[in-house]
Image 1 (cartoon, rainbow, N blue to C red):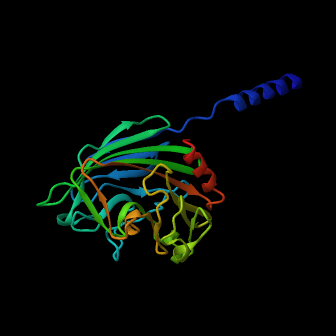
Image 2: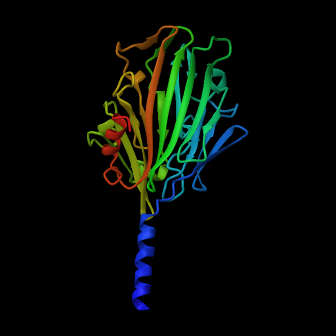
Image 3: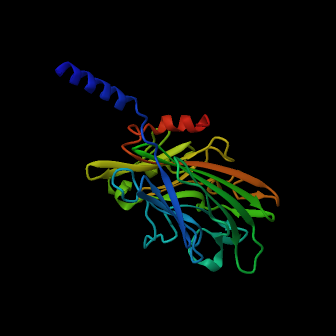
Length: 301
């Protein structure tokens, strides 16, 4: 009897080991001017596109361990920083970044859930850059793909195609394109770490430096969490120099270092495809293997 019982346990153990791991289930629901995203039943983020906002953005962006947002918004000193977002200042005299809707805003006209319920979520949107009394300079098409590479990492792939509806002049500005405002407790000022692909750390070493990626992370109780932004090698201006702040801001910002030193000019009909990968992770950049993750991204994985 004992031998039969042992044999049964061995067979049961082998069966359990051979069972496939349960796939992650990512779901989304569109409620008013938000698309709320959950991962295995846990709230991850919302894509927010309400009419009284300057531009669409993601908030919160919750970490895989703490469940708290690794990003922040509506800071009293810099109220134009809205978590994870895309915008630009100094576009044909309009401002599509800082507060003030009359100065220009990016209007979502077709936010949709393209795919959900499996291991991949896809959100698409079409946006018009609009300013009272002026022709719209830009239309952009956005595609965000959310996946979960591991239990300690969530991935957001952003593909943004900008189309110039008229001739576009962008004066030199430190407010341009894809950006993240980190949660205060993760900032360098509060003991966090900001590091680029070359190993440079902090605002002093990373500001204005071209690099494929920057990772920003810090301690939360017994855990470490952070967020990395990667630029795809196919992007125009790759690798763009970074605008960085120790208080918790990172953005690859080509318009602050324009090639002619004065402005960026694009003719009507010009299209730009900009691709970024966001990794929301636990651990340090070494523990999360951000460098290895960039190699995967660079090689189309």
